[in-house]
Length: 86
Image 1: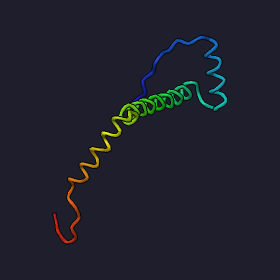
Image 2 (image 1 turned 90 degrees about the horizontal axis):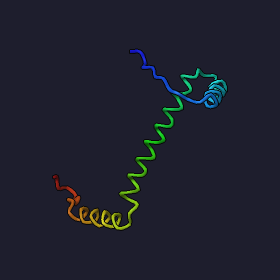
Image 3 (image 1 turned 45 degrees about the vertical axis):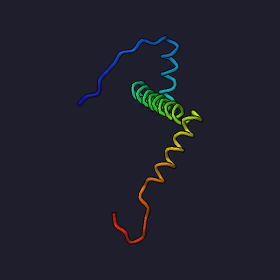
């Protein structure tokens, strides 16, 4: 399946910089844009995951509550009593 093509509008100054970087990397303009866009999207997704993680685990009260629940669940878990099979 062929890759979709898009059109974007950028300033002449940005286009010149883009072409310089693509040439430095020995890539076509299209390949350079596609690779850089993929990298930036991955960064944004990683930042979003980190932000969500920090929302959950960055709150000291929530962290303490999670630790308390973990300890309680540990006490409720079946114990290894040697030969007993569950």
